[in-house]
Image (cartoon, rainbow, N blue to C red; front, side, top):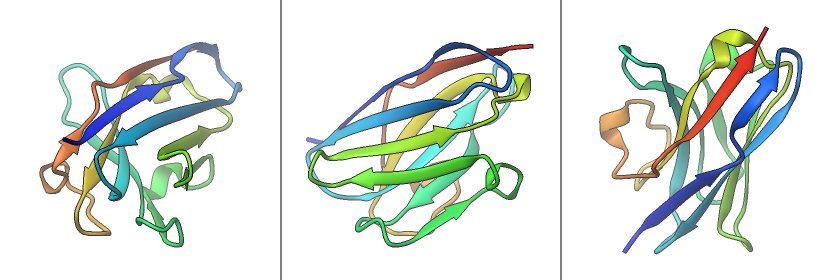
Amino acid sequence: QVQLVESGGGLVQAGDALRLSCAASGGTFNMGWFRQVPGKEREFVAVINWSGGNTYYQESVKERFTISRDNTKNTVYLQINSLKPEDTAVYYCAAATNFLRVRADEFEYWGQGTQVTVSS
């Protein structure tokens, strides 16, 4: 059984940095991060392949966001620098069998999400 558990969210100030974690169990997958605000669709942020050797980002975040993974800890990370109020969202990690998937419906497993709130 695949389980994904996010952590690391919280209330931060604009300009701060934050690192989100996603602890995975039940297999090794290509992993992605998405975010969602109320009333909007879940938005792709970044994806990393199973080995960590390949990554892909939404264009608007690639300068400030870094996805990484430590397979010895079965954990995927999302480092967010220079946080902006518009980064406020629930951040979800997700697992996919195939790499370079960017649509939410292409990911088979999801975590429960972690709230990130950025105050100005």
